[in-house]
Length: 361
Image (cartoon, rainbow, N blue to C red; front, side, top):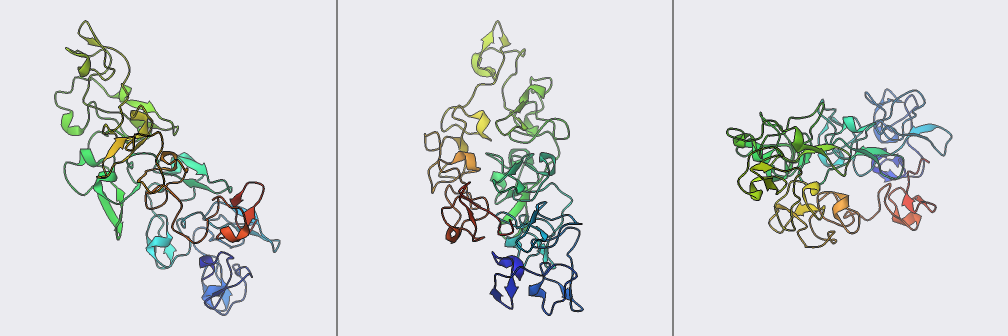
C-alpha cells in the first residue's frame, strides 16, 4: 500500500514515484489510494483524520502536518518513526501505540504515547510534545522510568512499579509491548505531578505512607529539565521535619533536630527513577537493567549501551530498542541527519538543515 512507500506511491506491489490517489479519485485497487481504501471504483478519504498523502485543504491530518506537495495539492505529510492513531497500517509494529486493528492504528481514549502526533504537551503521556526538526510534532519519551500510559516492555520500566505491590503494572497491548498502568494510591518517584496529574507519595511508595513523617508531598513535586514536574518522593524527611542525623533528611542537613531545605542529588551508580535525581543528570539502565545514575561513570552513554531517551546518549539518539545509536534501518527517517538523498527513507535530504525531510515538501 502507498503508506509503505517512501514516495507514498504504490502500483500493485511496487513502489512508484507517482503520489497516491486522494479521496474522491477513481481507482481500481486499494493500494493506489492514500487511505488504502478503493470502494466502488473511488478512493475513500480515511477515518476521523486524514492519512499520509491525503489532500488536506479541508480536513485534519493524522500527522497534524499539512504541507504543499509537488503536484500542487496540499497533502498530509508522512510521520516520523511510527504511524499515529487512525493512520493506515498492516501490523501492530506500524503504529506508535502498537495496536493495528482493521487496517488502521487504534484510536485510544488514553494519553498519546511517544511517537504520536501532538499539538501540545497535554496530549502526551510524557507531558512533552516536540518538533523532530522537520515540522512534525510528536510526543517524546521522558528520561528514566516510564510514566502512566507510556509504552513499556516490562514492569520494571514503569515509574509505578514500586507502587504496584506485585507484577502486572505493564499491561500488554501487543507481543512484547505494554502500557504503564496507574495503581491506586499516591505516585512514586518519576510520575508526573501537579495540576491535572498525580499526587506524590509523602515518602517513597504507598506502602511507606503509614508513619511517614512528612505532612504532605508538595515539596516532592518539582520541575525537571524536560519542563514537566515529576515526583521526587523518597524515604527521607523534608524541610522542617524532625531528625536525629543528617542522613534522615532529604537535603542531608539536620540542625537542632530539624531538617534543612533541599533534596540531595544521587551519586554515580546509585539507584534512580529519572535523571534530575542524579548529580550527573543521567539515569539509565545498568547491565542488570536497573536504573542507576551514570551507569558507565561518564556524563553520556556511548552507542551500543542501554538508554531511556535521546539526551542520555553521546550521539544524541536513543533508538526504538532503547539502545544508544541509530535505528537498525537501511535508511534515515524524516528528521534524521543526512548528507545525500540516498541516506533518507523519503529520498529527500535538505542540504540547508542536513536532515531528511518529507518528500511532499
